[in-house]
Each structure stands twice: as structure tokens, then as C-alpha cells.
Image (cartoon, rainbow, N blue to C red):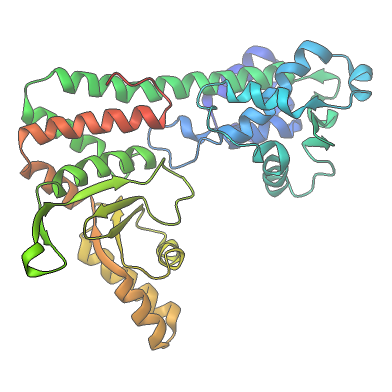
Length: 360
């Protein structure tokens, strides 16, 4: 089986120069980690899977100190306490907001999905204690736990480097006085290959500063009508369980959902989550918005199979389509001061996303 990630292959060759491929082919743990580490790529759409990886890493960390190459002692071990493991992986890079689902069930479920013929769970759960099954710690008589730890540590090192690369770009932009170049550099980050959460943050910054210049008039009577500017709020972190709402607008009450163009079934699921309240979809695509809208409607028609109530329900629930084209157009139209505000907003929300210290 081919090793997908080059950094994993390099570590394997270093540790097992004569038989690295054999070790890899016999180790489901190493194969699982290899499958979970696509997020190191600049244009990866994969999730970082930190919860699953850190759950494994936490057990490995203590195992190496206590039981490395000591099979018999480990066979008598009953597991590490949940609190000890949880506190450890919450202390790791990007781990402060992680929940306990990975330890309790998620790793085992996904592991079995990837390797349906396995006989034993990867993580043994023993009344609030956890340990890795010995089957996955050894290849023949070779303890591969240190290699697995080294792979995880290298993965985190690559993520840290990747995360800070955008911060360096933003710092340079904040120091620049060339607004043509600033706009061009922001546009370079708005591509179909952009990482999903970076696209969501940049989209929010542009939309927030675009809409804040739009006036509306509100009041409960003609005498009470007041002039207000639109305000856009981000509901939480990317990939959060937000019920299909990424941004919310005041005072008009609009919902925005950031998504990708090729998952139209997800659009309908997002609409269902908010009980068919109209949604504006902000889509990571270079396609013309009318093309996307026609594709979505065609998908709805197929799904409805002539049922008018379904067609009307979903047609009416799509308030607007916004693509990369509109985001770039609005970026070009706003003032230089708003460009600086966009850069600052990207910096703030990206640091919040990465649990980095704010300078503001």
C-alpha cells in the first residue's frame, strides 16, 4: 500500500530503512494516521481531525513512558484515567476547545469504517479508563509507538507552520501602504482551493465591511422610522454546530451559510435545519452565481420529482447566491480604509480560530 504523505514516508525510512514498507503495510495504526493527515496541504479540504489524533497521541505519550517494548506488563494494564488523557490533549496545539467524543467513541467508529475487517477496537474503553489494543502497537515484535508519536508530532509542526504563514501575510499587509497590492493579495486568498475556514473568515470580513455601508430604514410607525446601517455578525467558529447559520445580519434578519458548490444535498439540509427560513449561500466557487442558482434549482426539481410543495419550499428558501466573483467585486469597490478593516478583521477572527493571542 502506498504511503500517502511524504513526511510520513521520510519518518518511516529513517526508522526502518530496510523494511519501512513492510512495517507500514502491517500497521493499521500507521495507515490510519496517514489517512487522517491530509490537512497539511495548502489547498486541503480535509478536516484537521485533531480530536481523533490527539486522543491516540495522549495514550501513546504515556504508554511510551510506562510500557515501551514491555508487552507482558502492558497486557496486565487496565488503562489511563480519562481526566489525565483529556487534560493532556487539551494542552496541545489547537486542543483547548476539543471535546471528549474522540476518546469515548469517535476514533473507534471511524477506525472500523476505514478497516471494516478488524477484529478489535483501536481504543479499549474500560469504565472511564482508556488504552490502545496491543495488536496496533506492535508489528510482529517491533513496537511502533515511538514512530507513531513522531508522525503525529511532525504533523502538528507542519500545521503550526501553515497556520502562522497567513499571520505573516497579514502582518505584511498591515504595514503596507500600497492598496492596489493589498486588494490583490486578499484576492489571491479567495480561490476555489482555499482552505474552508480561511475562506469563511475572509468572506465574513469582506461581507461585513461591504454591508456596513448599506442603509436601511426601520420603525414601528412612520414617525419612528430611523436610518440604520446593516451589521453582519459571525455566529461562531468554523465547522461549529451552528444549525446552518454562519453569519447573521441585523436589523433585517438574514442568515448566511458558507459552503462549496458541489454538495447541493447539503444546501437542502442547511435549509431544513433552519425550518426553511431563507438563506444566503456564500459559495467557494468561481462559477457565475446564476449558473450555480440554476444548478441548485435543477437539483431541487430532481429531488422533488414533481412535488410542488417541495419545489416551492426550497426555491423560496434560497435568498441569494454569493460567489467569489461578488466578493472580489465588492472588495474592489470599498474604500482603502475598509480594506484595512478587512485585513484587521481577518487577523482577529483567524487568531480566534487558531486560539492565538490577540494583539488588539
